[in-house]
Image (cartoon, rainbow, N blue to C red; front, side, top):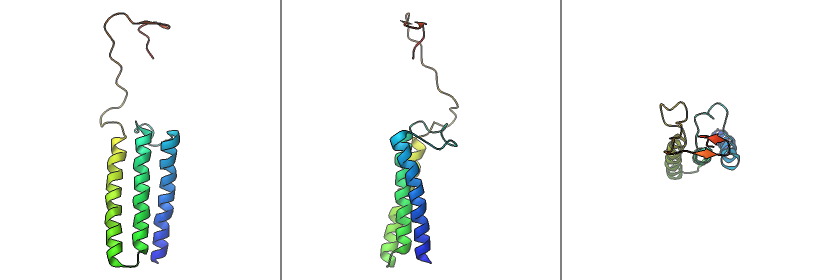
Length: 119
């Protein structure tokens, strides 16, 4: 039975890792959380750390001795906690619903599109 649970964790880690790799390489994040993520590459790194933690949890279930299982499980839980902090850091601060507009600089700012238009 433990081999099935280990395979379930490994499969979950694989699915999560695909999302992390997509966030790091292409900047793509799931549409349901896209508005909350400001730094997609940092988010992808956090998701990859989560995938590693899930994989280690699956490996701990399949481990042969209790000492190895408890050590690997401790490291896995630590990685999941670190990934939680990293993914929270990649998001928008609490209470900020829209971008803060840029401050206008003193003096006239005349660009190719007219006065005051900056991109």
